Structures are given as C-alpha cells and as structure tokens.
Image (cartoon, rainbow, N blue to C red):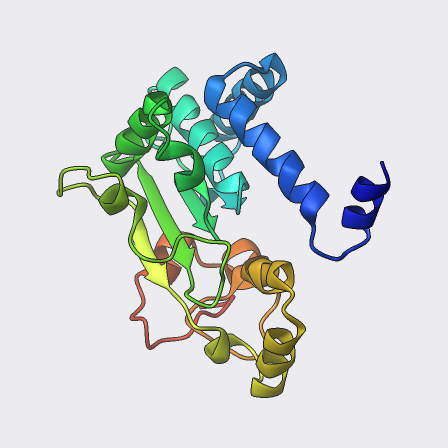
Length: 227
C-alpha cells in the first residue's frame, strides 16, 4: 500500500498508466461487457444524430487511448447504418495524439485491425490522424495503415504531422520541455494554440469549416474558424 501511495504522489502517473494498461487489455480481449455496451451506444448515437438532424458535419474525436475507441465506434456505426454518410451530414473522424496501435498491433486484435481496414477504405468517411514527434506518448512514425502493413490504395486516414513550435510561443515550448511532463505535452493536441498554425483543435471543433475542408489546406497554411 505504501508503495502504491508513493507512486500515486510521484508525478509519474504510474497509477493512471496501470489503469490504462488494464483497460486496454480488457478491451483487446473484449472481456468487459461495459465496453461493448458503451461503444454500441456511441455508434447508435452517431446514427441517431445523422438521421434526426441536418448538420453540416458529425465529427467524432479520439485522443490518446480514445483513438481506438473512436475508430471502433465509427466502424460500428457504419456497420449498423448503411445510410450513414449519405444523408445531409458529412461524417468525419479525428484521431490525435494517437495510441490505437497499442491495441491493434497485438496478435490477438485482428478484429480491431479489420475495423481500421474498413475505415481506411470507407468512401463515406473523412478521417484525419494528427501526430507529432514532440509527443513521446503517440505513434508518429507512420500512419496506422502503413504500420499495420495494409495494402496501399486506401483513402483514409489523412496523416498529418505537426510541430509544437508552430503552435506555441518558444518560451512555453522550452518550459514544457524542461518540466519533463510528458502528459502536458501529450494533451496539447486538444488544447488551444498560442498562435495560428496548420493544426488548431478548436477551429476544427467550433469553427464554420468542416474537418475535410480544413485538412484540404496545404500544410503551410493555417487553420481558421471562419471562412
């Protein structure tokens, strides 16, 4: 008990990481009925919104371990609703600071790889994946489809690598690096920028442009909430 309390107060997020590992294991094994119920409900909610409302866009966002949950929920939604993405709303998926490969690369996670493969070829979906070499907790080397060895020719995801220096003032980047707080850096994907950049989380969520329109821009262009 003393050791656990020491870890909890150490600032290393050890307890959080142990909880995360345990949850990922249950998810991979599909041994937790609560996971299945919530993901089915999430998928049903996506379909319900698409059927009932005339929005420009339905944007599903997954950060960190949420990336594989968002992928799974969207794949389930397309599976149960053949009309999803053909009505008035564009369906978009945004995965940032991603960790889906923590589960998908396990030999026993073929079912998740199948769902990623489905979304990679889904014509009714726009999927953008945003990563950064500055973040030690995400997979930034290649897109998930490349890492998993899928055949080329898929339309998703749009794989985008961003730079911390483009988003934040230099003094803040230096302070964050010196603090060695990996989680603070990891969460920058879902936090506000100091300056206009090619990736802006709140322009994507709250702006007038769809995610697809925002990511059509050149990497050198900045995102903005309004046309």
